Image (cartoon, rainbow, N blue to C red; front, side, top):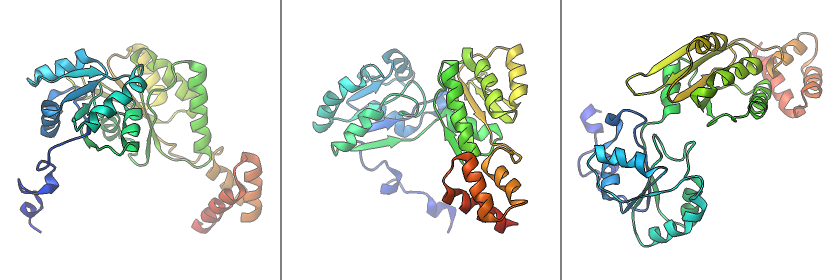
Length: 297
């Protein structure tokens, strides 16, 4: 099929422009570079009845840069629950309401989930205009395995809670989880978070992305210990996305490592029983994985 045939015509309903937006519209906005705003996002923000945002001043600067004059009201963690009924009432009155975060894709580590859930439950229209996202941008720049990945928002700010959360993820890895982990982090906590990652996960490949799409964008790649050394010398600044890749070699403490060690001297059944007892994992799950490893040779 010619490339031209794949492009939607101006009247093609697939292009999303022929039908006006209505209901609750989740609008993605730039994470730094204003040039990343889409034409659909501009149209939605310029034509909606109301824009809900975390900070009217910050969103106001974005709107002013695009010469958009629209009514804005706050919706944040502290008032979201109280605002839901009034917003649903306006949606029932056929108003179009845009929801934005301070930057990037709404809902992702930002307020709005409870409102979206309530609108869906009420049978009201909800749609989204996709766009910039710091977690995905950092992932594709990191050089770490892109799939699967797990985005986890911000780590707990207190060290004890943070290490507990990391230990839970490490336990999941030992049970067979293999993925790249992605977090947002405040610059003043980055170094201590990297130290905790090193202690809990060991020294493996990681990346720190800063100020994505902005003038001083940087992506530091290396082992966790190398990043600890770097940010000990040079304290981090700006908005941070932190990533750590999966182990690149078998870990003797994870499920596969334990099973391979057991299968060297035991039958599949006995190896599964031994590892299931040692790890506390369901015997059926461990047996299925042991059988797979055995058949792979």
